[in-house]
Length: 147
Image 1 (cartoon, rainbow, N blue to C red):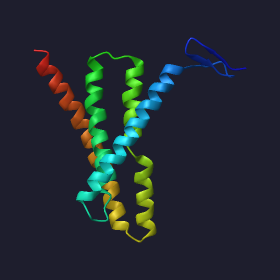
Image 2 (cartoon, helix red, strand yellow):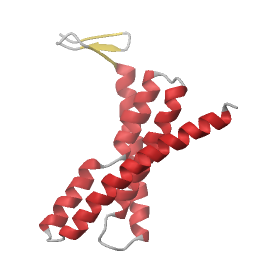
Image 3 (tube, rainbow, N blue to C red):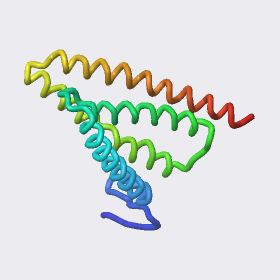
């Protein structure tokens, strides 16, 4: 039996899902996806090579943003719904792990192992560096503005 009461959905397992949280995730994911689509298209127009610059740029900027924002929200308290909107919804919709994997599969399939290898190395190493850098920059800015 399904029951809707005060913005909560009680599902058969007895767990309660917050309807507001679901709406927040839906909106964040949609905005992240639209932003990814636009940025990927614009970025790919500047680079006419076979390397997936649009996907790489989106994933790297998303890596930086998640590190940067996480450092702020370590200090600044935000609501669980705002956190879900930003991290799960927007950044989850914005970054493109499945697209990244499909591009690598296609490179291997098309006998472009060097391009696939470069894509894997750049995305993983640079992504980790940017998460770390974003986090450190955020912490630094917090310390500067708290003085």
